[in-house]
Image (cartoon, one colour):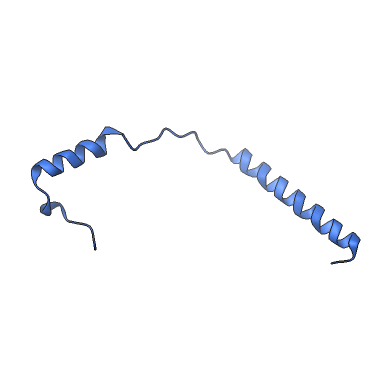
Length: 62
């Protein structure tokens, strides 16, 4: 089942579709991406990974 082409819709349907698409109902105002937060996540994940490796090394597992 594929998408329908524009010529399969009547003018009234196309007008309603364009009205909904241009009304902004589905648009969400988003904050800009914060790279600093991503950096700190990597620091935390790396720190926990390093700590677990160190504990495994001290326990003789690695």
